[in-house]
Image (cartoon, rainbow, N blue to C red):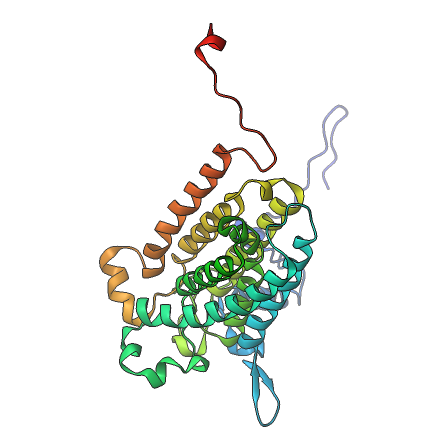
Length: 331
């Protein structure tokens, strides 16, 4: 080491710089023998895991519970659980002030709405998505083979509510308000069941959470069933429960059902951008720019917004309308 004179700075000793590429990759310098290969192997493993899509088959999901002589499918359980949960929550709602019906009406609705969902959903699927089923009645009634329409189910429920209101002389709009609060339970469970069954997958994608579904080819796809469960199910449940229990929305006829209709239709419209169209309607979606589901939700968005605005423009139950100003008052 060279000596330095008084007043001079000693020379600075610096280490050899680590190449930029190696610094960014987190690979240590050559001065640490035996670690370079280990770090490089770890980085290669992490990179491969990040680029590898999730395989639905590796999740170990089964379509139902095997009882030996019969398979109890999760999709059926989801329908049943959603309806039962909706019934018990509706019963609790009816115990609050301002209820438009009695408990006996809830029991009638439980029966007729169940029929409306099943029959309307199946007939709606045959009408909007698979018209060939009308020529094969034996296949039309085979509900266990899948094929239910959301919009057909909505029509079936509306008809069921209309029948119960007609028989019981109930206010149709207010009954719809109370029913709409409970629909999200079934939507949430039903879409989760779709995912467990590995059906209704999304469009091909390169996102990190893309999944390869066994019956959808080798490409990773959006798990659109989970998107629907989140938007059409969980989000709707949170919004509707908050409106009913934390506000006075139930005293404005049409507000709850209007918000529900607009929100769930908007959620469905959004998810359809990620969901794979039905094979027989792929050409229709490509030629029109929107899927069949999106075209069917557009009127629902308009109706829902119209109902909500109408409800807000009218006085709430128990609230007197503001008296109209006369010419004398104006003077």
